[in-house]
Image 1 (cartoon, rainbow, N blue to C red):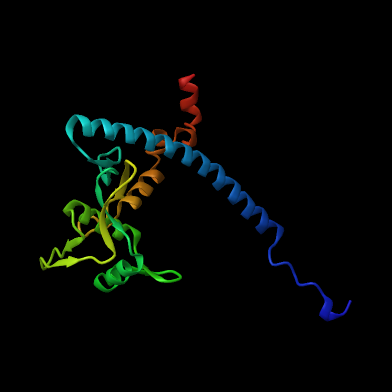
Image 2: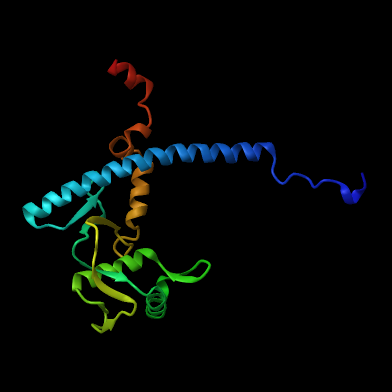
Length: 204
């Protein structure tokens, strides 16, 4: 066989392939557990929120860690007027120009999803496609957004954002709590670490 016909060296070693396939298998198994638990939790929360609205009129509730740290808000949606992006291009161009710090570049330049949710929540609360600059008090009409009735009753979880007083956002707070080991026994007992051998013996 001539030099020109020599096969190229394999790009990946057997060890790399084994590590990659193992990683995929482990993540898939974990994902299945998390998805099942999430769907159950979401169904339970919806039933509770519907009942609370009937009893007290409440539509928004805090999501907190076991120590009381707030990591987000859960609010009822659907069946009521809500702000929706109806012209993605017009809204994105406006948001990029008005809030350049929230713009991110992927294949195209867009706006942080969490920030979009924040703006939509503000407009939903106001009942108009407008936002108010907290520093200047100036009112802005937001293009590409309409206040429309949602079709399906549901709820939305919005994580807290990082701020000067709390530099860690809600997602990061959850991640920290998960790493500490306090969340697994509560939210995913099937994936919680087994207790130490001495504790197992004592329980027996």
